[in-house]
Length: 208
Image (cartoon, rainbow, N blue to C red):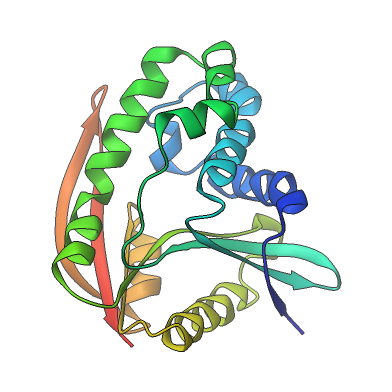
């Protein structure tokens, strides 16, 4: 039985390591950080910095099975404001320059902003829209229905907090199929190209 909880500060490292395992071979990461060693050095650290910087502004949630964290997610509510550069620096951002190639890091950050823009714009344009900025299931627990159950919980969580719509984006056709089967509708799509590689970018919404 899954147990859903709010992420505690002392669980950020565990959640970030889970997310790093989930994203390690995901095209959205590998297209910008092609080296295995670079991802091993920097991915979990980068995700931890992101969670520390966003901890107070986002709603971070987890799913546990037999006391093990098996999924985690972050929701940005209406009116969410991006943390300041200073806040990210205090969260350890400068360490990333020693763990990754700075050109790779800057390229990723620029494209990440571009990829999320349709969702951010939709959230600003319409009332009561929540943005699912991250959701990951530990690869060891794939194909067990955890993603479906966790997503359903997140939707209920948004409803309980007054949300009417949830938006998100994905870059993977398998994930796209997962969401569309659960009544999410594509409202924006384009391609992202980097170093001769191309991936899709689909923004989706669901009325709750």
